[in-house]
Each structure stands twice: as C-alpha cells, then as structure tokens.
Image 1 (cartoon, rainbow, N blue to C red):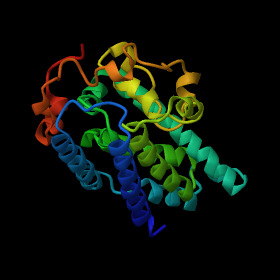
Image 2: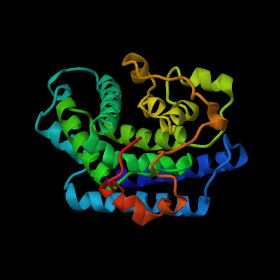
Image 3: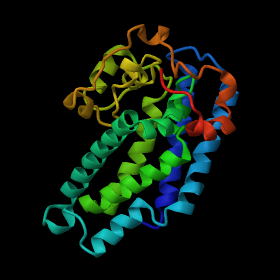
Length: 265
C-alpha cells in the first residue's frame, strides 16, 4: 500500500478534470456567483484540510486497516470469509457509516455549525463536493478510523472506499447535465447530481433529505429520500437563507463559519 497517496491523488485530479470539462460543455444550471472566487477558496481548503488533519490524526484509515489486520481487531478479521466478500461488505458498511454521519451533522446543532460551511456555498458544482471545514474533516477521520477497526476492513477496501468517496462526491455535487432518463436509472443505485442538489436547497425541509454520498439505498431505506426540489432544478435556490453575501465565499469566512452566531432559518 506504499503507493496509496499516488493512486488517490491521481484519481482525484483525473476525476476533477473530467467533471470540470463536463460542467463546462453541458452545465445543468447557470451559476450565480464568481466562479473564480469560489474555485480559489474551495480548492484551497481541499489542499489545506489534509495538512491540518495530519497534524491531529497520527494514522490514516489504510494504516489503521493494516494495523487491525495484524492484531486481529474487528469483525471481519475474526471470520473466515472470502477476501472479495470482506472487501464488498466493508465498502458497503463504510458507505452506510458516512450516511449516518452526514445525518448526524444535520441533526445535532453543534455539528451543524461545523457542517453548515459546506452548505453556505451559493452555487453547486464539482468544487462544492470538496468544500468542508477542517474541523469536520478531522472529526470524519476519527469516525472512519473507528469504523475501520470495528469492521476489520481490509486495506484494499479502505483504499477503494476513499477513492469512491472523493470521486462520487465530486460527481454528485457537479453542475453537469445528466439526461433525465439516465438520471432515473442511475439513482436506483448511486446518488446523482440532481438527487443530491435537492440536499443543497435553501428550503430546510428539502435540505434535510438525500444524505447519501455514494449508494442511494440508504435514503430510501431510512425514509430521507426526496426525488425533486419544489421549484425545479433550474429555479431552486442553493445555500442557506442567513448567508447570502457573495463576499463570504472567501477562504477566511469559510474558516470562521462555525464560530458565527447566526442560527439556521
């Protein structure tokens, strides 16, 4: 697993470029704010987050998976099942954990103050899927570490899951047009841009749905699925009602967001 970083970065850059070109050639909606400002801020924080996380978290999920296997920690490390099945079970279970984590960040007020920065973006494109506060990234890292240990996930499963998580997050946050017939088919299995865009609606009753990032099953299973926004994808408003000033799309505002006092409306 010594090439993990190279593999992940390569997939990250490749997927980002492909989706950015897709958005340019076939946009779903017209953007309302400066793309230059948003992209600079959103891409800066995505490179800042891993650096800050490594200062706090001493081990990455893949390293934890290797350690758990060596010490027989976790459920799957104590059952004799085929390796491929352990990989599949681990990926699906980790995806469910991310769904639960996401729902918690919307439900618990203190966690929402942190996660709200992700929703304060006034537009919705590939970089929105990378826009998370460092505190949320660090908390998410600890949740993933604990999950890897409890599951006993193989290192390969963790690498695949991390690549999927980043890649699908960029896809389902993209402003790329997906034909409606294809969208209806895809969302039976995975979260599509139209499905997840509902989650970024300014209307709270809409944004408190569609928590899934990869598999769309969890929202249907737990009753948090909403098919379409009330005002349609072209007419819906993205973001939070209490933060509408485009000047707050800059990096300093993003970093201090959890410490602002405004409550969600």
